[in-house]
Length: 254
Image 1 (cartoon, helix red, strand yellow):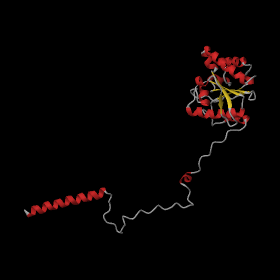
Image 2 (cartoon, helix red, strand yellow):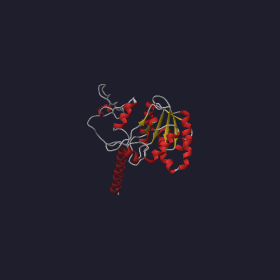
Image 3 (cartoon, rainbow, N blue to C red):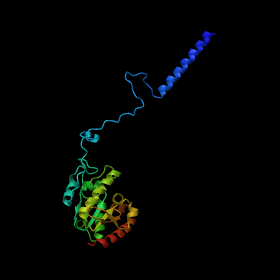
Image 4 (tube, one colour):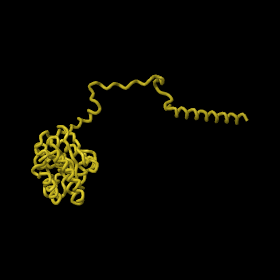
């Protein structure tokens, strides 16, 4: 009987020891005995200070990238940059560029969105049937292509003929710089894409009133109207375009 009781007592002691060891293990104890004594209640030593001569972590990754080069500050240099720069949105070695034309001293700058496929072939902005309608619109206010300055938000055509968000943002920044170099009496904005990029408003909300485009040289007055390509398909909208042109000639007389 006594032997049985001793065995039961031994078994209970073993269970208690195992339970205690498990508790210490869960508490984080992983070493029972070390060769050197250790004060477990002593706070951990602070990490060694980085020597003053050591470079900061970012410096070891190499120099920071250089800031974007400033845009040309003279119109003729900026025009040459538009014709040659590889940094323009949608630029590629084989992509044709349709550059600004006309007289930057005319007082009237006209801005379209980007060249059409027909424009890329002709080498002229707003060409073909839309171009002939555009010429008649100019004649109605006593102007022609030689007495305006015609440019595009992008002198390159995107693969799908549309602006993505980043492309529109970059081209709008270039257009504001461009307008600041020209400083026309008025900027006529053609179409919805240009209106959204420069004003943050769709054409239907922007039409019928003057806006100001901020530039490095000061604000430029801007008016939004329907593009000739739209008017070809919607002849009834020509009345709206004519109302815009009458507002324009009140500001910029030929």
